[in-house]
Image (cartoon, rainbow, N blue to C red; front, side, top):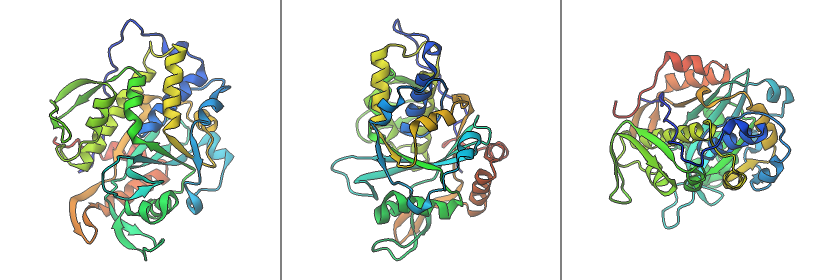
Length: 353
């Protein structure tokens, strides 16, 4: 079964330094939430004067991430929706074997971000990196069935986008790569988060054990938790779920009343997030923040593409067999802007439930 986290993690307790988030200028609210969520898998924002956004956009890298898979720029879509973005999570970890590379990094997270027509809701659909799908020819690869993650190794981000468009039928209006390894800095920049776990997780990197229940995480521990998959219900699907829990916790923290009006703390958070981003050359952070102005954390839904087997035996090793019928329905719902209704009719389960 696939799943979606339906209960957002509570915001971390406020300390004596807590300040009123709503007193921030609108553009800062927009960029804080936008970049905090983009870093690990989502997009959100408020609106106001975006006079200083260029400072942070200049910190991000800009590359051609979509290539021929890019949707022709349509100003009407950016003003009224719907919009679809490709969000890729890369993870640079020295000393570990390659499993597909994106700009020299591992591509651990693949997400389709859909903004509704009214630009007031967002749906973030995770596509398992080990999904066994058709990967078009590129480089030394002649085309055929392989793990989705292999598309990065064969042709970088543009080829991954081409492969995902072929799978989903969704044409992308923009793309971003978030450096997953920077999550610890992001969590520390918001003074930690409170994450509620529906099962017990034992770390494979240390002797830490996170019992079922709520935990206060700072950066290093949050990163270690989000990298677990061998001792998590559902394996890689459990890791996706844990990533979603931390994303929701960050969203709740940065959008809660009484957060981050200190200019130095605010600047640290924004710079940390921006430096972790690579943005498609056609994408403008100011435009994205403006577009996402009506999306609140409560209006962000997380989901995972339905699957029938997480241990399909293939020439590429153990892979994920997607549920072709349900996946086809889900992707059609994204294209038709009815994905939130589809999710309501097809509730997803948490691993171990």
